[in-house]
Image (cartoon, rainbow, N blue to C red; front, side, top):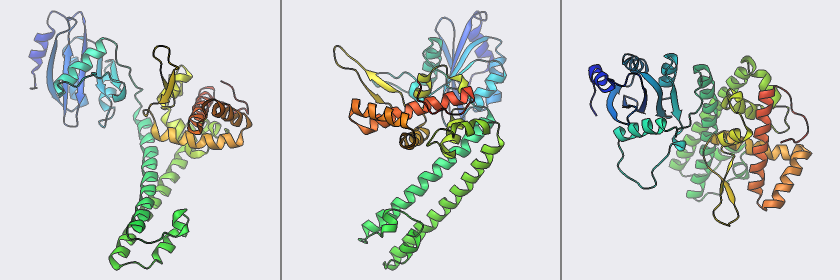
Length: 359
């Protein structure tokens, strides 16, 4: 696609000024591939520089009524959406997993992608996700940095264990069940000189990630006590098994909890809602779809095990589900779903947890 002049775009919209237009954008780091769809279904495409302000200004200068601008969420964030919203232009940021896909593979390019987005938006086939404010986005970035560091620490430990296995060295019990004495025990092993250097490098990397993790966790604790959500986070921690990490993660990732109208929407957002497949006379079955807030979902499942151990009502729910399914993983996932719904209600109603299991 080539860049179009403003006069070319105005010629395309001429005669349709009193009707609605839809815009689809394939957003990239350096450029926007855009499609403008008229009421008669015809589209014109062009390439624009990746500047939210410049693109918004270009659209406003057309002097037309925009029913909606749609683009796929991704690494470019929400700056374009915020710019459009500030200009009172309706915008739909759609999750990639929720955009309709063809059953069979066909031609694919940026031009076709933006045309499809405009067409899907015009037909009401796109469900928008919530657009966080810059402040909400910044808080979530620090939280997600914490998740990344936790993964890095875990991977570092696994690499050390893999190294010992590869060179045929029996790992100490302090390493098998990692304890604070693990680094000391590792440095005391008798290894080949180059293997020793490799191990020392892994340990230095592990120390760095652990130090960064402690720093970020301290910053998160400080943020949780200073932001307006501190009371909400305190309410969440009244649930047995929900500590500061789970409470802070839930409050920040579920920003503006009042935007959810039903418990099912919360479960779907977190990837805890089973998808039922029922055909003919077969018994319907459901499974969790790996979409949504994967890190938060993992934290909720971990918290559900503790909740089950500390709350008799939660334990009863788990036992009933386990008797029905016979699979512990399914039962605890359902308990985690109930826990998530309870936490959502605590945020919306701004109250502490009552030791009772209500739907």
